[in-house]
Length: 226
Image (cartoon, rainbow, N blue to C red):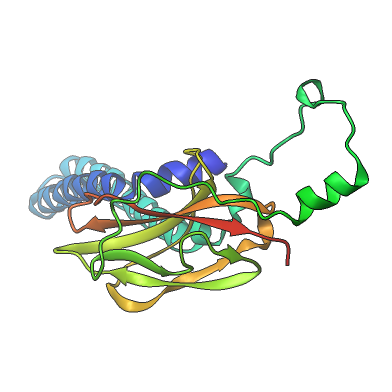
C-alpha cells in the first residue's frame, strides 16, 4: 500500500494529465451519444443510443472518481503518513559487530565526545529568496514537533514538498507539501517522534506549473530523543 501511495505522489502531475485526456474523451463520447439519442426516430435506434449513453456515463463517472481519489490521496493521506512508513528501521548485524570490550573511562569519554554531523555535497539547490530552508539550520539538532521555515518562490511556481531520508541514502519519505509560494515563512510542520534518533537529510523540492522540479535544497539534521 505504501508503494501505491508513493507512486500516486511522485507521478501526480502525469496522472492528472492522463485523467484529463480520458475525461475529454468521455465527455465528447457522451455528447455524441446524447445527440444520437435526441435525433433518433425509431425505437430501436433510441434503445441502442440509450445503451451507449449508459456506457459513456459510466466512463465519465469513473474518470471523476479516479480524479477525486488521486486528489484526496495526495492532499490528505500521503502528507499525514508517518515518515517511518517509508524509512526502514536499521537493524543490528551481530556478525559484523566486534566483540571486544573497552574500559569504563574510555566508554564515558566516547559518550561525551560530540559526533560531527556528516556533510552533504548536493546542497547547491539552496538558493536564497528562491528555494531555501532557513529553519532548522544545517547541522542542527531537532526533536519533537518543529516548524520548518524557508522560501519557495520560483518562476511559474506550481507546488513544493519537503522530504526526509537517512543520511547518505536515497530513501526519501514525503513529510508534507504545499501549493502556495512562501517568502521567509512557514513551509509546514514536521513531527520527528516517528523517527529513530540519528542523522538525516531534509530535502526541499519545488515544481513549476508544468511539473518540472528545480534542483533540491538539502540540509543535514540530527534527530534526538525528545
